[in-house]
Picture 1 (cartoon, helix red, strand yellow):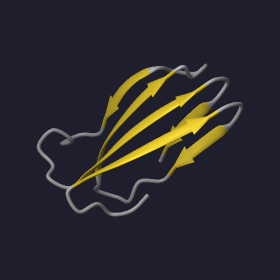
Picture 2 (cartoon, helix red, strand yellow):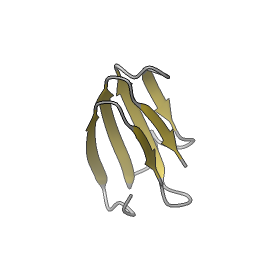
Picture 3 (tube, rainbow, N blue to C red):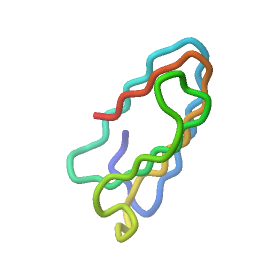
Length: 69
C-alpha cells in the first residue's frame, strides 16, 4: 500500500482468493469487508479517526480471506 497523502480509498474485489495487504508502519487504516468467509465487518487501526493521512480499504469477496500486515 502507498503512504497516503490525505485519505486514499482502495477497493479490492476477489473471488476464491487470499489477499495480503501490507500497510506501511505508522499509517492509519480502516478495512471494511463484506462477504468474506473468514470475517465481515470493520477493522480500524489505532488513531484512524484522528488521522488526516489514512487508507480506507473496502473489500468484497466470496470464498476469500484477507490479511492486513
